[in-house]
Length: 279
Image (cartoon, rainbow, N blue to C red; front, side):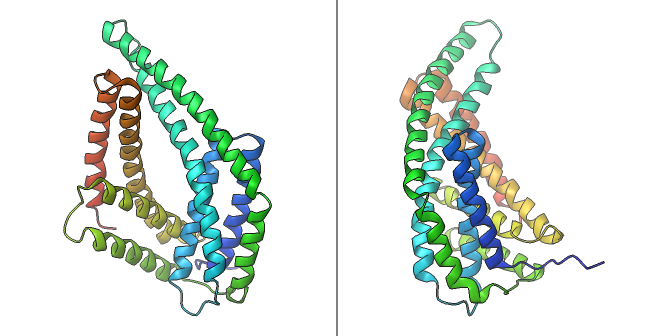
C-alpha cells in the first residue's frame, strides 16, 4: 500500500481552490443563499492564502502581473460577498436574541419589537447587497476563469514543487508571528484596527495550514488552533458591527444596541485571552 503523502503542492492546491471558487459563483448565480455566499467568500480567502504561501517560496517563475490582476478581482468579489454574509450573520444574531426573550414582560416585548424592526431593515438591505453581488458576478463570470488560467499558466513550470508538512507548519507559524510581532511585539493590542488585522491573519494562517493533505495531522492540528482564534475574533467582530448597526437604526438608548455592545465586550475578552496562547 502506498504511503500517504504529507507534502503540499502549492500550485496544484491553487488550481483546485480556483475551481471551487468558480463552482461557488455558479451556485450564487442560481441562488445567492446564505451557504452559497459564505462559500464564495471563503474561497476568495483561501486563494489569497495560497498566494501568501507562494510568496514564501523561492525560484518561482514570474507571475506578479497575473497575480495582481487576480487579487484585484478577488477583492471585489470578497467585499461584495462579505456585505451579504455580514447581514446574514446579523439577522441570525438578532433572531437568537429575540428568541431568548419570549417570556411575557415589558422589557422582553420591547426587545422583540426592536428585533422585528431591525430584521425588516436588514432584509431590505440584504436584497440590495445580494443584487449588487449578482451584478458583479455576471460582469466577471467569463473574465474570471481567464484571469486565473493566465496565472496558472505562468506558474505551470512550478507545478511539481512540494512543501513538506514540517516546512509548511514552520512557514505558517513564522508568517503569523512576523505579522503579529510587527504590530504588537509586547502585548495583546487594544486598538480595534490591530485586533481586526490579527483576526484576519489568523484566518489566513488557518487556510494556509489547511492546504496540507488530510494525512498531514500536525498541519491540521495547527489549523484547528488558528480556527479557534479566528472564531473568537470573528464572534467579537460580528457583535461589534451589529451593535453599531443596531445603534444607527434604533438609537443608542434602545435595548438591543446595548445588549449587543455588552456581548461584544465579553467576546473581546475571550478573543484577547486566545491571542495570548502560543501557536
